[in-house]
Amino acid sequence: FYDPETKIAVLLNGEVYNIRELHAELATAGYMFHTDLESEVVAKLYVHQGLDFAKRLKGMFAIAILDGNRLVLTRDRFGIKPLYYASVGRKVVFGSEVKAILVHPEVTAQLHIPALEEITVFGYVFSSDKTLFEGIFQVEPGTIVTFSEGKQSTAKFWQAPGASYFDQGHHLDYSTAVIQLRKLIIETMDLLLSHGDHPVGIYLSGGLDSTILALVARNILGYPITTFTLADSSETADLLTAREVASKLGTRHSKEV
Image 1: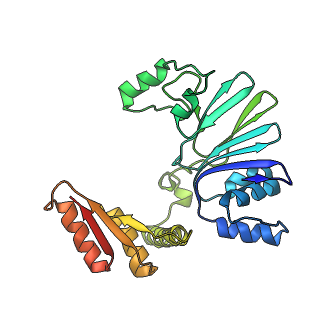
Image 2: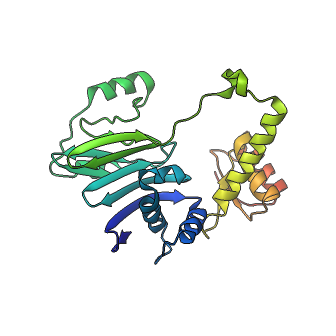
């Protein structure tokens, strides 16, 4: 999205689930909208709140904002959507895949040995900002990286809270924790499923997590969901359990064996 009034350009990969709430808030504040794009809402929110805009977003996203000579890159709280970048002189190359950066003629594919060592130990690159290539970095989850006038700055807009179990002053008893968790799951599922007008589905693995989500979506919230299951045999326990869950919930169930 490009705003001809502010000269701000926004690239958004992903989904912002509270976009309707933000749209209504910004409209009340006097902002005019010309499209139904989520990226336009992000652009207006950035104008309204500056770099604090990212704190307001709930969803899975990778965002790039070009504001004059300032480039802003940010990524959702859990890093669901990837975002990579490399500095080439006074230029910044970025993309949702490393290979998008490697095709730039001024970027050299050089192995980053410390990242390779991390893979041999952990099975993946442990450092949240590193990649397998020298000079190519990840925007860390819950982070904003800003480039302006040849300078780079990094700031966290979200940090996972510590486990309350170890903080006896804020430790919840079991019943209260159950009630709060139930409320959060229902609210979150409603936010996810009410976003957009596309059909929604849930992958049933046969486990507890996906069963709970399907139960909330179908029986508590009343959404007409489709469920899916993949298995390597028609008699696996997971497939049979998923089929039973789908039958009891009355979902449109599809399976692939």
